[in-house]
Length: 279
Image 1 (cartoon, rainbow, N blue to C red):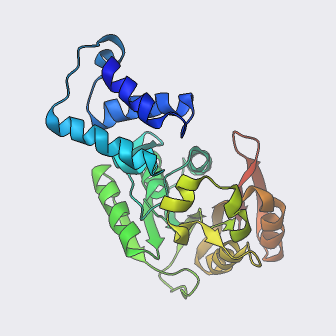
Image 2: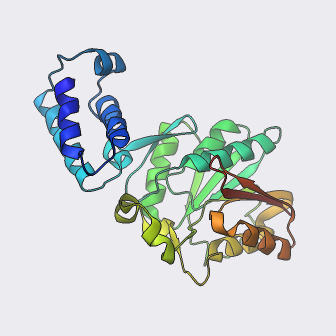
């Protein structure tokens, strides 16, 4: 392994920090090259097959082009599930896992009809289907490619989720759209914030799932909240992951629309990150 790790360090030095390179070594070795931890940390006499040597060279080249390691390996872990990812979907973040745990905690003792709007990889819907197995889960997205990825992830995680393609900005709620819980992690990054973002996110993750106009940062929150009033049951709950700069504004918007029991929560980094409100 020493020769393999040395090669990775030498190729990536100067572009990534030592800590990042250490993480890449572990992920590439275990997830891509299928080298177990014992071999990774204790053995030096590891010889790669021609096929695996090519995989390693390709992974290094992709890292040099700033491609996220999760897209290179094809998956990531989220809420104890393995979620397949590719450039058609966002890579799930730990903060989103905190939102899932909040929803699961508040609805653990009820049989819910749950809708995830803008499902992407399906990570939220899948995690909720696992943590609330008594519930019926639906998931919508505008992207056919994202929905295909989400459906594969649902199958691989043995969950039953109803996927539908909808553009929530243009969608008219139907009488059959009745849910006890609606959750969304919609696009919320303003265009002006691009200069603060990591290059691997800008270059590789789907813009469709990231950005909103600078002049209307609450576009998706407001639209979903308005339409959710027609789709939620009498005691229904609406959950959002939010831009940390607009927590108070989202809460004020929900209050003006007549929502009650509005709560704003911080994530593990002490940023305003999620909101819950009830009809």
